[in-house]
Image 1: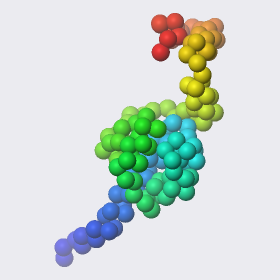
Image 2 (image 1 turned 90 degrees about the vertical axis):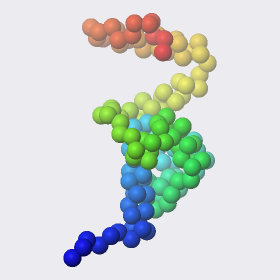
Image 3 (image 1 turned 120 degrees about the vertical axis):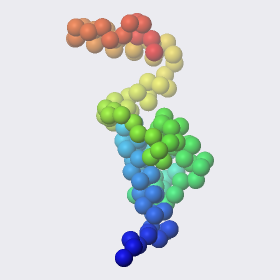
Image 4 (image 1 turned 180 degrees about the horizontal axis):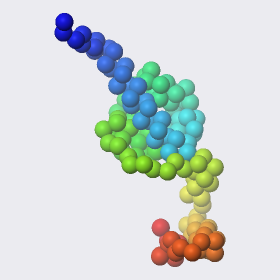
Amino acid sequence: MPKARKKPQEALGSRFAEIGKCLQQARKRRGLTQKGLGEKVGLTREAIASCEAGRSNLNATTLIDISAALRVSVGEILGLERRGAETQIPRRWAKRMEIIETLPEPVKKHILRTLDDVIKANTRMTIFEDGGQE
């Protein structure tokens, strides 16, 4: 007996679930909550949760906004591109980095130099060859 084909609606729901899983993984790697991501793209926490659970679809504009907010490609959210093993940024570090990004450039440079000095004083490695510049 031939194998039964999935109904189009079932296949679509399965695809939404895959996209939702990729979205959730990208969001967590950035150390963002559903609420935090929603605020960045103008959606509610509930809307983000619904997308991640595969219960709703993302329109093209929202997909682009989310990929920009997460600094990943649209292809990655759609599950078309795979990222290698990447260390997830703890939320407490991600929050600090977001705050630092809002500071004036001279203050950011001072923070990076200070951080470099602390790292160099506590390790044997020289990790920044450019004096703390990005």
